[in-house]
Image 1 (cartoon, rainbow, N blue to C red):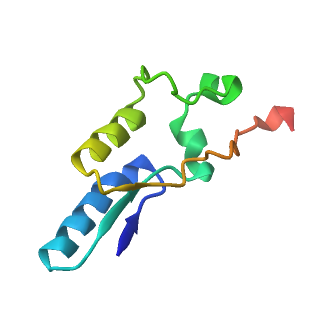
Image 2 (cartoon, helix red, strand yellow; image 1 turned 135 degrees about the horizontal axis):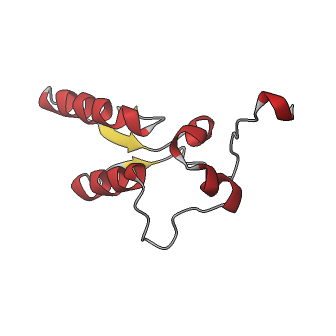
Length: 97
């Protein structure tokens, strides 16, 4: 079973579900990522406008560090739904509409 996340807030539930399934002798793989719909909740406003993707390895965003730690602990994990296509949702103030 592939247990997927759509937001960093899902990561603990993914860990828990995978652990429980493996204890029951099921094959399970964790899948971590951020769905493009939720990027506005995760990235800072400046990152939305500068198209910053943390490619330098020097990012200190909490979500990025959580993802890195989980991938190091679980090298069999899959990464997906991280918005590599660049599609993002940026909330527009009602006054600007």
